[in-house]
Length: 276
Image (cartoon, rainbow, N blue to C red):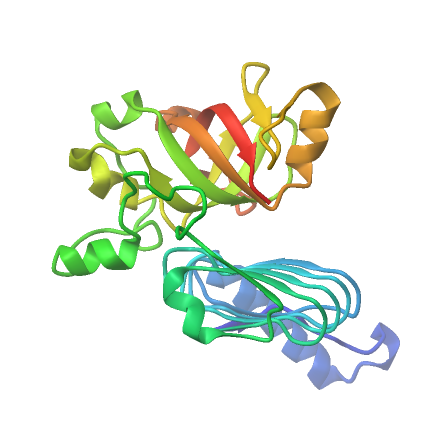
């Protein structure tokens, strides 16, 4: 596990050994690549910290922080302030701890026993978006059902899909990461409205990253069901924490890249409902 936060004295006061350690650490991080688990530490101010698809340890400090674990059996710790921790990824995490302050923690049902110090706990599926729909099983459940041979979004990249899968419109429940032009980066928590024969393909998406394309034809609604247009829709999506999308998977040639430069599943979005 690599450590991403290095606090060093000013350049003129650093001993030679410190510079050597810093150089080695930078080299290790560069060679580790995006697939390596990380240990991340925030600052005293408001931070936005996003983990990897592996088992990360993320610890915020001061400020009103936003923490997203993504995949893996993570350890997420808020610090002082009103923090928002998102552990919804279809996998069981080791601990989700809000810390001091009024914190909001979003978790999977399997995580509930691992939550502490969160004044507000939002549990995926039960009563939320996707309830009552036909949803694909999270990767760990699908893998167990298939005797351990099913692929997951974290184990193999990129996932592959059949022709019928590209033809269907699915419901995606996800956390959002700010609107950038027409691109809304998402972390996929649930995939619903999937025909039974295609559930194993949909399971590949759960717990992984994606990009929702928001165009002029996309209908945007707030949490109260009111339709938003123009700047109001753009502003609301830019600040959204979670969304429920009606979308269709784009073929791999049209996939956009994530922050690591890797192509990720990309979706044409006909409807975007802001759920938080």
